[in-house]
Length: 142
Image 1 (cartoon, rainbow, N blue to C red):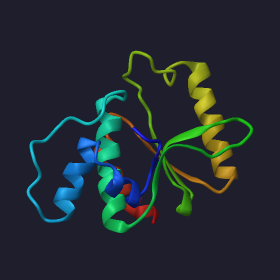
Image 2 (cartoon, rainbow, N blue to C red):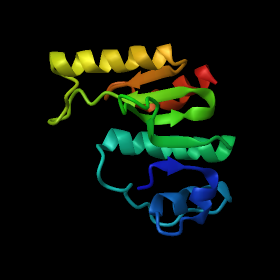
Image 3 (cartoon, rainbow, N blue to C red):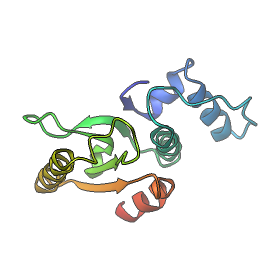
């Protein structure tokens, strides 16, 4: 999956099943057989990406995946709307390989979010309990 997502990328991509279904729905056509989102991320992150892709199309707003917001520390947001300086993070607290549950990992996240705020970013955070509210919460910040 590409890390940068724009409306033109979605329209140009004929390979991504997710994009084809979204475009068909946007054009008012009944989408074909639903295909799974691309592998590599947890189900919640893939679901959020699908929702953000749809939002980007309908609102004509660029959404970026794995957006690097800090040049020195190389920190990245899971998703971002750079034009609005909004970062979106999924906290994989239940994941087997999550670093968010250790003291060191949690402290690193706090440092990252504090620095993002100092640089003028708003960070919206989600967990397995509230990730389906991503669009509702995002709209509050636009």
